[in-house]
Length: 464
Image (cartoon, rainbow, N blue to C red):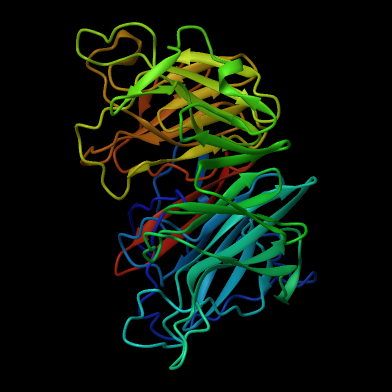
C-alpha cells in the first residue's frame, strides 16, 4: 500500500530539482484497443486518501512520480479540461517522457518518445548529460484543440569549449494523440535574456491564453504559438500578464494595464477606484492586472475611500473580457493577510497565486476569491470578510462545474481543508486529513500528495 502524506502544491511556479532519479522508471505503455482493462482502472491497490464527499475514494487510479524532490514548489502535471485528460512527466535518468491518462478511468492514452531537456543551470562543475534541467508540463488550448507543452529551463550547447546558451525548451504535443513513442508536433527553443541573470527555476511556462504558451523570467517574457511554433519576445517596458485575442495584456511601468493598441484600464476603471495611486513618491495610474485565465483578466484597484479602522482596505476587484476590456464582475475584497508564514503546501508561494477555472468556464477563482461569471457574484475569503471578524484567510485550489470550490486555511497545522459552495459563499471545514483536488475535470478529482520516502503521488478519484 502506498502511503500519502501532505498535499503537493500544483501552482506552476519556480523550481523543481531533478536529483538522483535512482534507476529506471520506464513509462507504462498505452493500453491497446483490445485490452479488456483499457477502459477500467489500473489493476493496482489504490492509495488510501480521504477525499471530499463528492468523490469516491475507492474508485480511481494512481501514478507515482518518484523523481520529484520533497518540498518542490511545483508538480509536473497538467490537465486539459475539455478532453478530461491528465499529462505528467516521467523521468528515466537523463531522459523524460510525457504520459497522458483519462482523468476518470486512468487509462493511458499515449506516451511520448524520450525527450532530453537541456543541461541544468546549476551544473557548475562542468556539463553532465545526466544533470538535466527540471521538466514540467502545461496545457494550452488553441482553435478548439488542446495541447500539452512539456518544457524545461536550462543550458543548451554547453561543453568544454562553449559556455552554452540559456533557453527554455518547449515540446508541443496534441492532447488527443494516441499510441507509444509519440513525437512532438514541434520543438521550440526560447532564448532567455536576463540582465540580472536567472536561477534554475526562475523561468516558468504557463497557459498564456489565445493559443500561446507564455514564458516568463525575472525581467522578460516571450510567447510561443502552439499551432505554429512562432516565438514573440516582449520588452521590459511592460509586464505581460497573459494574452487575449487582440494582443498581450500588460501592466505598464507607469501604472494601469490593458492591451497596447486595443484597450486601456483608464477607459474601464470601475466605480470606487482612485484615479491614481502613490508609489515611492511617484503617482501611478491606478489598476493592476493580476492574471489572465480563460480569456478573462482579474484586476485589482486601490480604493478611493479611507482604510478601515484596522488599517485594512476593501480593494476593488474586477474581471474583464481580455479582448475588449469590458468589466464582467466588480466586487470589493481585501487582500489576504500576510501575518502568517505560508508554507510549501499553501497556494501562495512568493507573489504567485493559484488561479483555477471550472471546466465549463462559469466559475473562476483567484487565490482567496471565487467569481460566478454568469451571476456576476463574488465570494471573498480574505480574513474577516463579510463582517466575520474572527474568520481566517482561505485559499482556493480548484472549482467544479457546480460551483463547489476546494481550498485550505494557510498556515493551519494540522491543515484545515475547506469546501466553499459559490451559491452560498459559506465555507465549511472538512474532516481532518481530507485532501482537496488540485484539478477538477468533469467526472473526477485529481489529487497530488507526498509519498513517504520521496516523490509525489498523482491520483484520480471519480465523482460519486
